[in-house]
Image (cartoon, rainbow, N blue to C red):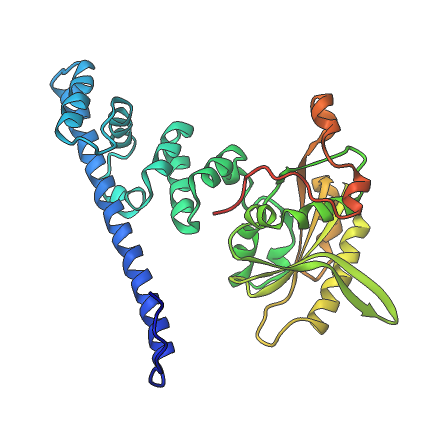
Length: 350
């Protein structure tokens, strides 16, 4: 039966849109509430198993018996396998403070908690990734990728002049926004790739690029045009960072950092601030990404530069390092120039 079209009173469309939003929010809160209760239950079960085994000397076979009894009682309910009960025990052992469970890990899905338990042994490191997962909403595959690439060790490690070029209220946040090195291993390029090849590859995989750049980055475009003094200049990649409230210009270098790179970025930032910065925005920030950099050379190059600039390395997966049959299947630099997309690896953000 087709729906009869009838005239709706003024304002109905806005009211309907608001109701849809309220329903979605309520469903999300309900799902989160269910998850909190489930994780809390898992912690209590794990705590009880741990206590009975450690304090009362119950053997390991009690977990096998418990798994069978619970599955017999709650048929069709998943989550009571022997393996999952052991994860519950490990979960309670890893997080003995119930306050942290309620504040952080109890608000994460069980899959992310298993990832934290299976991949990280250090409690401080585990808590850092748990808090980051909660803040950024990482899915389990994204969390696994961040752990594998050791995000915690890279965050805030770019060489910058932010302490001199930015006010104290902004310099610490800006420093934490940048990394070193950046992991672009979602790209596979030849060892002799050109800077434009790298840029095209990153733009083709912009979803993965934004995931690696981090929360707050919005991609504005590539080869951003600046006409200065009757000459044309182009910024490789241009972003806007929502928390920093500023433009972020990225210059890609296929080789090692050279001091003149800082001068060119300083030039770009001055032009961006004059021509593209909106009222209320903070001064633009530059990021020079190189295949390699010498810390002493970078520090000297940035010492007398007034604009806020950071320098970091990036890492690629080189086709030469792959088996010959696989390397031959990858797009060449010439194919990239014609706009051919790089092969997807399924490592998207979510």
